[in-house]
Image 1 (cartoon, helix red, strand yellow):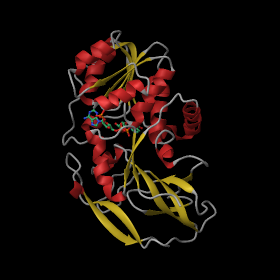
Image 2: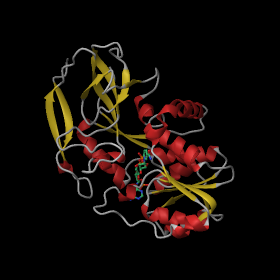
Image 3: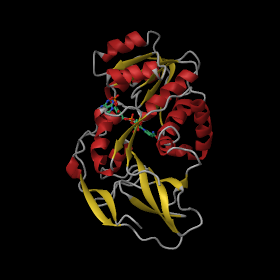
Image 4: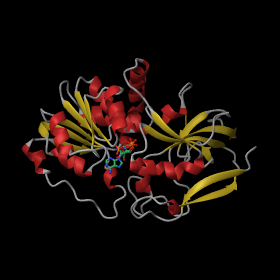
Length: 339
Ligand SMILES: NC(=O)c1ccc[n+]([C@@H]2O[C@H](COP(=O)([O-])OP(=O)(O)OC[C@H]3O[C@@H](n4cnc5c(N)ncnc54)[C@H](OP(=O)(O)O)[C@@H]3O)[C@@H](O)[C@H]2O)c1
């Protein structure tokens, strides 16, 4: 191996509230040796996802909590640099839970990684054809099920998931309304993604903005943020509305459970459905979504963007951007370039 060290970022203490730099420690250790049936993978690009914040808490969720001292878990694309198994050839690009580090070991079973199809860029494999693209696709089409003419409201509309979800709604012939935290994001969402309106929820009274943007009410709400925006959306749903609960990032750094919406009776009055979903339940159908999204991208019908931060050493700062709204589209960290 040419590189002598494996740099890693490990959980030093569990965050309480906002992420702070001292929640993590940087470590350098020898690059792992591989055994028979294993391959050594060098990380190229890390996916930063809000769900990582949940894994840093003490409580297990749909995945076990990251333990103190462990490398922070994250999906990433890497390149096979050494192989002692048939499954991986040197040079292959792979996706797997490489984490916040330079190198990881893949094997054929427990730490299996998926070889990327030829020609797929790492940023796309982690974005539009990755977890966030899949989440947008199944959350919108399977859970929210918009119909032509519906008013579809998407929060986090300039983020990785929301930007794709909003465009899918537009492709179904819907009126698309989004929220985002800056005017620049809102401009991108309307001018490039084709939303009919995008509201900067940090600017002016969001209730008034929503009333103006959704004069006929809301038929579908794709919720990425929870909190106050969910409450405002609930207040405006139409009969038979569908709310797809994708995530609730506004509460991920809360030290105590945030209060729920106080208007859930709207679901009764409007005979509406609110349903949470996890993209992991759709893994067997990912090929269907990838094929459709690839077609839309090739036809220029879906715009795809990433914010890429350079350097593993900047991962913690970059991760904080998810909670301060620094990213447009998919947030990634470039660790190294493919050889
Ligand atoms: N259910 C699933 O299987 C699944 C899978 C993937 C992701 N998710 C969820 O989907 C949501 C989006 O994830 P993503 O990876 O696509 O991230 P993202 O939208 O690319 O990035 C997060 C964005 O959230 C916004 N935000 C942060 N704090 C906020 C707050 N207090 N109120 C309102 N908006 C806030 C910020 O944009 P602004 O500038 O607009 O504030 C930020 O850029 C998250 O809730 C995530 O947990 C769910």
